[in-house]
Image 1 (spheres, rainbow, N blue to C red):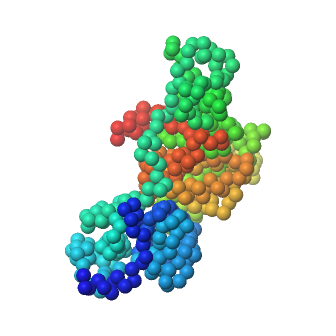
Image 2 (tube, helix red, strand yellow):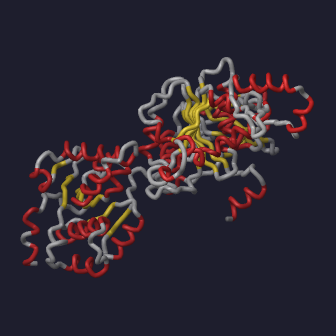
Image 3 (tube, one colour):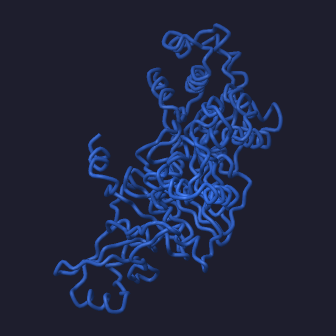
Length: 508
């Protein structure tokens, strides 16, 4: 090991014991959670200098979460490592661990070591940042006694590291436990007399054993020995109460919407209860998450006595930074494909009823009357453009457009929410399984007094490469907020869009 003497001259001071490990952090871990350097307890943390280069190339991204997080990481590291000596020797973190920047002196010098020779054979392209970060982790493994683990959220980097004999794992700090999979609701057995009392009084106090493990605002199904069932919600002190839901809800001028199954009754109760400020909802495609959330919101927003001034609907746009610039048109036109599901929902809830044959209907009115009608429509709310024959028809106006133009309903991409304070709004965040836990926290902390936020999504359908079914913002938020007085969670499992959609969601 004569050729390693120069390399070991700048070895940092690290902790060595049977329980201590050295974790090497990839760039995506720091971007995923800028505070991650404080979450490895008393272990050693090594950040390859290549990570600093990647952060430097990302920090100039404006109006993106990656760019903001890169700048945040830079500020954290600048405060922790103020000079060259601290960079090389490392510093002790508040939680007892050690942090240092690692420079691999063997990579470009041509000097040999078993690990570097193996790397050059298996991954010869050392211009790739991923390969260089793996090389830095191999150098740490070769030079320092504790077990070395590369922490990365890139699955391919994990596989390449393991192929080289280097332990690698995902960043687990914000992942929910593996046993978090849960049924949509629990059943509580009651005697026939207890069920009768519940039906007459609307509430029932469970015993200590029956209420054990139940969370506040958890939805349950009460079942008597004779098979009679009643849905209920758990309140503090083991009290269960009947659901407070109307027979149906509807948007102004819209069609009545009724819950089609027990789980939708649970969701409607949570959406209509003003004491619940945060609702999380899991559900596969076609279970009614979006439609029921929108109609319950409009039912309250358009009520004269509502606490909400309007409805805001948003969703993360995963390909915003790369693909949206290539779409033609204005920003609104670029965003339309991502936001189209909400226009479809509004169209379904508040349908238009145009004349079946408007070209024949025109013949029944005089030209003078028709001209006055056209002028009235074009000058009123929800203006229309004339049709190709020069006429406009009142039936052609989509009724929900008035809600959009008056600001009662807002539909926008999530990227424009930062810096806002959302007061007295009913806020629906769809596809929230695409968010990181940090992004979910950013959105929820925008919610002011008098507002309500609903996070809905399917944890099994994720396009974001850096989150999965256990680490996305939706399941993280549910896991951390469950049991709180102002939070409720519902899981929808039964598809109601169509029998074909239900079959496809289950089998394909």
